[in-house]
Length: 241
Image (cartoon, rainbow, N blue to C red; front, side):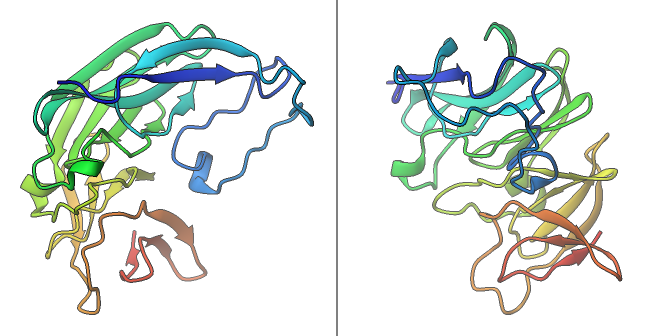
């Protein structure tokens, strides 16, 4: 039985027609939460925002990523209790036309059922590559142009990650030649993978003062006077990149 089938991806006119700035990852470019856009509407019309297009999608709470005239979002279709297929969709930004989709088997066993309803993590676009994380830790790198899977893995199976009650929700961080994820495993709170191959570059252990594994927080890169650092959580040690 499918649940939550009434979702729609909407394109609303928020700026005057022009070439808008991309939003390629969680909180926008660089994860700064800053929109450097001009021509933003100062007041909504009495009739509300104009819907440019509307496309039905399945269950999930992933935010969309926008890059190069394309929109990327993930969803989930349940086939049996706590089992189904997760999917990433690529749509044309102007028309909403689905350009391609890619899906994989997903199991939500171990999650609180209230939250077992689809991916939460916003996809990350890095040039010609797209990185996505599913609710149970499925990680994949895909080609932007056609959705071909270049490499994939699983944060639980590959790194002994601890599946939280509320699922994996962090969006992969691309930092230079690395993609950073937070499996939350005893020997792999944070991991850095080669963004082209998926091979492990380094792993960071869970700090002894951490009460729970680091699995809910999307990492952010920061440059200090001494080193490039990855900030994962208040309760997790930062790691040099």
